[in-house]
Image (cartoon, rainbow, N blue to C red; front, side, top):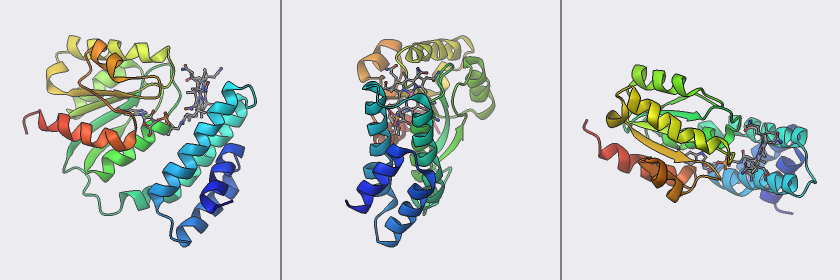
Length: 215
Ligand code: B1M
């Protein structure tokens, strides 16, 4: 088994300590932070979700897997951020919508935004709509990025867009949406400005949207 496969298995098994040790070893062996992230950590969590669907994994095990990913990210994040000029590309407020505790994908989107030079306020998971509106009032970001992992919480996204409009803020920000159940047609349907499949493709989309706003 290659070291990347070994890390993937340890994330799946939810073994934090082994995951971190193997991540450090993989870096020593010359693997890049991005390779480890994509091929081991994200893949391991995907396997975990598949196990949950088949009834082979349960919530406590999913939590252990997500914790393994999070501790590994403590090692990888500084490497992913190396050389980025934070703030130059614009400002972003990110949140997972109310009722949804999934925050790993959002964290990755935030890291990729920072790598690309965005100043990011990551509000984390389960954020009430009114708190997102407040943050937009305070920070005046160019981008509001919303994440949802559950098919029922994606329905909170149009409420956020409506609340921004009601507060008179809709024209000053671009709203991007994403997360596993969220697709381009849903983004179009709810009047979001942009959608991205993953953290990597979220960056060019955010830059494209930023360019549509005045300086
Ligand atoms: Co939950 N969960 N979970 N879960 N969980 C899923 C999402 C699920 C697909 C598992 C499954 O059934 N296969 C399923 C949702 C089904 C559905 O509604 N369609 C599910 C369920 C059902 C639940 C509960 C309801 C289970 C229960 O209680 N019965 C419960 C919900 C609690 C709640 O939110 N109210 C629940 C709880 C949990 C844990 C707490 C145990 C844990 C979350 C821990 C945490 O995040 N801190 C957990 C986990 C770990 C998962 C899986 C296994 C992994 C999610 C993850 O982190 N993926 C997940 C299965 C899966 O995804 N295959 C599952 C890795 C991450 C990098 O990917 O988040 O998709 P992702 O983010 C990607 C893209 O989606 C995209 O870029 C990211 C990086 O490339 N993206 C954006 C995300 N946000 C974006 C925003 C953008 C652009 C792109 O622009 C702004």
